[in-house]
Length: 253
Image (cartoon, rainbow, N blue to C red; front, side):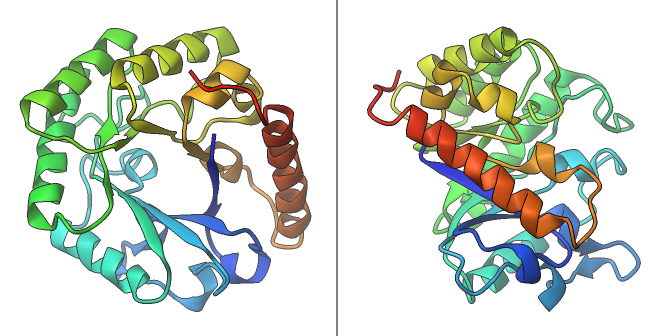
């Protein structure tokens, strides 16, 4: 793993002192005003070196059947961020396959995978100059393989992909290891981002070497006060650095 992104939420400017930050479109969307709002309270510090913009699919579709904003609004948000920060990655609009998401419109994983690929094509066709990261969706290994095949058939040929629907998973690391390492093997030299892997999975050397990046989304859902956040982030960063140091010099898959 080369990069780890800390998810920015309310007050991020005051407690985040890390170089790599993930901004979720879901956390900046205000349902009452029906628009994005990037105020000083949810922006990362000026010293941020890399920004990964995520669509916020999991959090949004726990509440809505589809994205409450348009592709145009999402891209406008990306350019707004790009004016102030180095926008290094932006996830395509995807449709998570966890059981707890809203399936009012797209009932099956198959439908959600098809829609994920369709929206990825829309994103890249609309503005190919942005650093898009298509999101591979599914829940079983076979579904992830099928989604990869759908990307190939649609002519999507990026070198950096993300694997979705892993953030909220619980279970033995061996199960997640098999899923991620098999997907990585199928992707070849393409880089892989794994959304929201918790420390128990990042400590697994095979998982660690299979992915190019991950983020703190799973940890970030924990309810903590603003006073607690600086220390918790410092402690978490130390753990991430310790894992990276432990695997330094080892070969990747």
